[in-house]
Length: 136
Image (cartoon, rainbow, N blue to C red; front, top):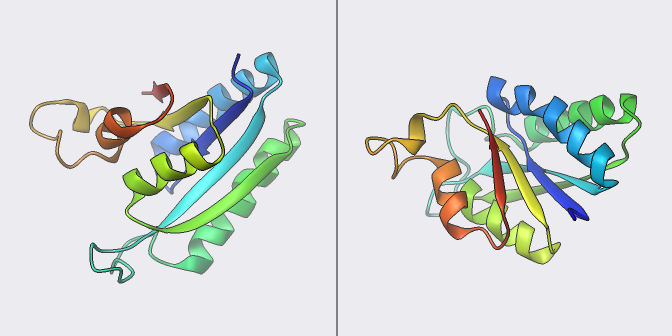
């Protein structure tokens, strides 16, 4: 059912908390797992200042660490690192790899009317080319 699962990760607790659900899904459906991390840039293409995800080295370390966690669970995860606006990059990559599911951790704050325009998760839900599973 879910041949390819895309798991966008960042340094958030919510992303870490979603890992166990991703492991379970990949094992149940024998899915191909793609880890995605985005070096966030401003709308003008410059790397966003003062953000944990604004360094190529930090994103690379994050991906390597996540890959090791999945390897311990017996899952061979592929890694993709991109630059750009996270919500758009996530949807573009999902389309490129023909993802059957995007799994994201979320605090839920952006799913309220006050945070709807700011939330990466909300933008992905609205733009994704496939179903999106949100792990609160």
